[in-house]
Image (cartoon, rainbow, N blue to C red):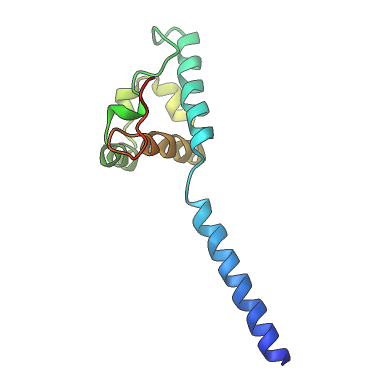
Length: 113
């Protein structure tokens, strides 16, 4: 009986741990939206861009296009190189999650900037 209970507890722990690990691989869309806009606000304050509004909205590309951009880590088309270079991997994951979730071919494409 004790062996069955301990096996059940180990199984529950493994299942719970796996769920936490898989959840950690996904970024936070809401935080990504905030960080994405914050990058452009900072860039605008330095006088590098004309507007605080990001030059690309999520629906500017398809989900596959966003994957390519973030896999290659080529952010030149966004402008604001200095700000993009300062972003952590977690921030980049959050921004990717936001852009990918609302891409032009997503179930819920964003309709405005």
